[in-house]
Amino acid sequence: METLDVSSGLELGVATLALGGQTVSGDQHLVKAVPQGILVAVIDGLGHGREAALAAKTAVATLENALDYISIITLVQRCHESLAQTRGVVMSLALFNETDHTMTWAGVGNVAGVLLRADPATNPAQENLLLRGGVVGFQLPGLTAAVIPVMPGDLLIFATDGLDGNFSNGVSVNEAPQRLATRILAQHGKGTDDALVLVARWHDKKHKG
View (cartoon, rainbow, N blue to C red):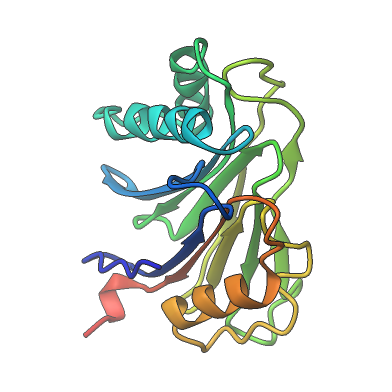
């Protein structure tokens, strides 16, 4: 389990578990400040064990080393190039823009993403990430990224396929992100694969403190 403390507009929590009998996990994540805001990524190396972990960590390093501001789609393309000699990964990314209060997200494979609205009057109350089939590093699909507005308190959840598809059921947007991530993993982890869930609550920095 891991608690992240990022001095930013995001309150974060991460819970992860390697498949039984494995010493490393092929599920990895990254949270990084970029010129426009905050980049969040969850990466699942194909399979499990050391080769899956190597692929996922290669993708993380590629994102870490992208010092210039580039689009979500370009980031995925750079990962695709760097992963050519690995098993490949599936991944989902979100960029929180602190200037215009939007979130841009995209996904290749099956790292699920949901955005839960803090304001109960918002319709729809939940946004779901549209995933494109493929493998980063092997077969990259045509990529699209969606841009949606975010409000203070909105909650992003990324989950790898080591969790069942009901992971967002019954979630309270008011629950502390780390507590929520830990609970989701405990209740929805399949136990048949590496698993990782990341929870990020957006805060308007102008109204913090």
